[in-house]
Image (tube, rainbow, N blue to C red):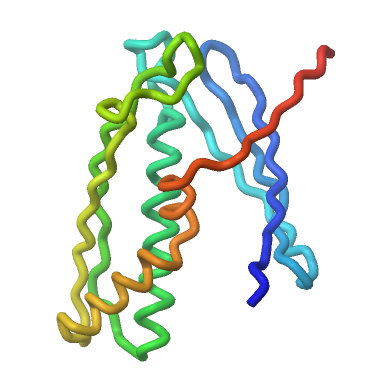
Length: 160
C-alpha cells in the first residue's frame, strides 16, 4: 500500500511583539483535486516570555493539533463501526522542554518531553469497541505519530 501525502501551504506573518498570524491557504491530497481553504490562526507568547498572551503559544497550538487529529481519527473509527457518540473529549497534559541545548544536540532523555492524554467518551458502544477504536487511533493519528518520531526538517533563509 502506498502512503498518500498531503500538501499544506501556510504563510506566517509577524504581527508585532511576539505575535504572529498564519494564513492556511490550501490543502490537497495525492490524486485529488485541490480543496482550497483559507483559515487564520493567531499565536502569541505568554507575558512571562515577552508576549502579550493574546493567543495560544506555538506549543499550545501544536498540542491542539495533536488533540484534533486524534479526535478526528476517533470519530472516523466510531463511524466505521456505526456507533453513535454522545460525548468525546481529549484532555492532554504536556510537559515539553523550554529550550534546546546551546550545542543543538538532542535534549537529554529526562527533558525530552512527555505527553499524557485521557479520552473521555460515551455513546452506544461497549468498552471493548471503544478500546478497539482507541488502538486504531494510536495507529492512525498522523500528528500522534509525528510527535513520536524524529523527522527531517529543512529550512532556508532569504533576506528581503
